[in-house]
Image (tube, rainbow, N blue to C red):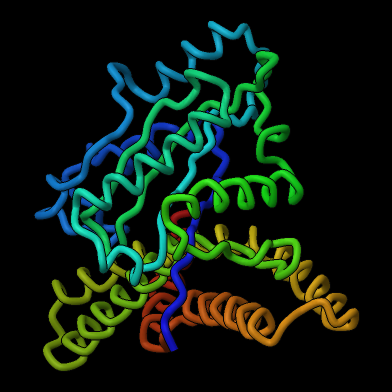
Length: 316
């Protein structure tokens, strides 16, 4: 069977407080990226941008809001990030010039369909596993309102974008297939970043377990201190990741309900059933990976927590 080539695009909405982090990742302004092991900094020089800018994301956002005289709230979505890519098999057949032409063609689609001048960045990354573009725009409507909800705010809008995007891309790349609509599959996009963080958490646990083993063998105070320090970071990172995962709990429940209804109505194919099952399994595996605490780490953490509580009690 010949692997299918899919035209992939996803929207992510961001409020003002997230803008700095988005820019740092997209424009590669940091010197290291511990949370994303897929980034190969030796290849970062191969990245490029397709939209020239002379200011920071935040400055460009504020400037556009002022020009269009948009009303804003503290919790307004001020930036929509679009990740544009395709299946690995599609890129494997192309050289760097052809890959650039692909992203230029994709960018032209957004320039045609968004309010003129609202695209503030289009950064192409070649330093990760699959070539992709982070295209960012300020969600300003044709009648000068800041409204991500109106532009990409519901399933009908997202389906429109997916259909229109595939139609545009397939004129030049007819081999690209359109992914099944989220209205049919109920598919929930869980950012790969969460899976990467979970893997890092697992690596932390392995290092801590090795440090604890050294404590048992050598009984060194320094080894114990190092293990305690790592455990503190591990527990903080784990709590942070669990809080991020909690956002998807309700979404996954709704997805299961929608899928059950579709199966009853026979509106879903075998391929789509397998895709939904895979997505649900990935989510459950991710939750299990993050929720589990190795017993040796848990015991030392409990011991240190008990000692800390005793010391607090004695001081009081």
